[in-house]
Length: 179
Image 1 (cartoon, rainbow, N blue to C red):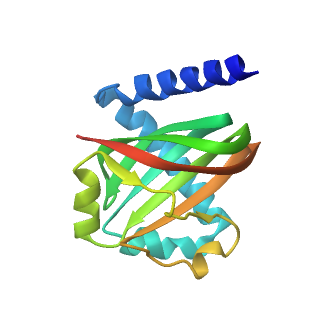
Image 2 (cartoon, rainbow, N blue to C red):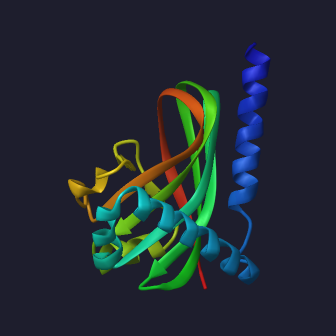
Image 3 (cartoon, helix red, strand yellow):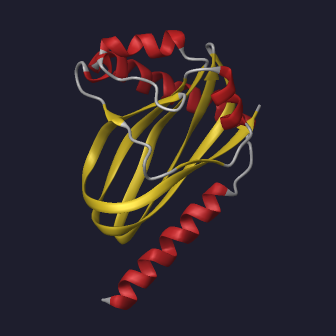
């Protein structure tokens, strides 16, 4: 069992590391922009009150699909875009490593809104990390009505599928590749 966990952990780390090192590919912009727009439409349909974040944020990241899995040690990866206004200004890669009680796999969309240019510019410098204390609001009807910016950001996730049991500690790291 221990060898299996070590093997799975090693495979997760290799997969996350390899995808995090991939460079900017201008051909990806159109693909991720289209997927992000679909995720935005789904988010707004599920919770129309979220529109205020799209309208008033200095910028926002949409990662249409984050794949997450783990058995003891877990990892997640997703790629999306950074919008400033209605324009895509960067590709963004999310990677996550976690440790603790966890089992299963899931897919979700992640939305990160920046309250002001200072927070947005910090994010755009690259190698941005969200620690374990950063909390996301799960998208349900009306969930964003009471949501607020915390430390200049508001984070939302919308489940797409899968099942994951988790009591783990981890953090997310973002690589920003400007256009």
